Image 1 (cartoon, rainbow, N blue to C red):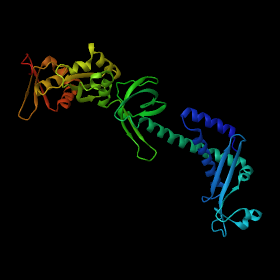
Image 2: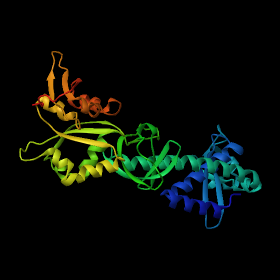
Image 3: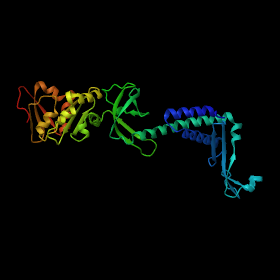
Image 4: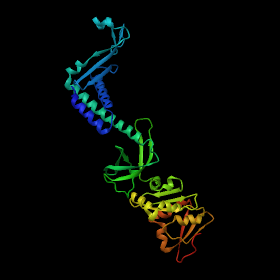
Length: 357
């Protein structure tokens, strides 16, 4: 038979390590024993009860049957005639339990192996389900927020992070190549999606790529964002290369970009450090389209911006600044287009022209 002392020790260990209820694990094992009994000694119709007594080390296994006048299903019914001398103690319709524990005792080796295997499989499955349910409970109210996690394990391109005692995968598609994930390091991730479709398999998507990660990082250190003094109008990002942000305020005396950057650049530096050195450009909102485009092309020095009949921004830039305006693999001008909503055509000039107004 099963060694209940070892089973009890395993239950206590798993319950403590995984944060699961001891009672739930006991029920898992009892369910596994019921399944093993029905498979090898009974039928699928049998109503089997199992009780583990850890104090005595005994396993009580009984079959439930209903007392009837005439048996139509011997697996779930028993007649008064079959009860013999005990028949008078029962009425028709009573439920009785028949002890079949001796069947298990007579086949200890075989049943012990079957029950152990079944229990092991069910425990693994149920622990997985319990872990998923626990993770969902932790993250269900955090969609759209950022959380600080610890890198728990790295296997090739699979990065697992730990948050509040639960392990979650940071998908490859949400990782940033600039990041160097090492076990033990702490970092912030954006909770992109939390879904529970009711199949016991909730979906938690964490991201290091989402532009909102950057916005939320600034919220951590910028009270003006929290109290509404300034707001992020738009944010675009090429993860690992650069993020560009437009900020605004309804208060004329406030410099929104300055607030986000912080005294001596302390706030933006903290965000850049969290992003493993990714550059961040912050500009103030203006309804002057020429000025907005010129700012969006930072850090390049812009001479002039004009719009043609098709609404394309014709941007004059010193030839010495063209590389900066274009950016790595065209990233700077591409982000500027996304940020402003305008197509941009750069025109390199030898001498300085008139600055954008």
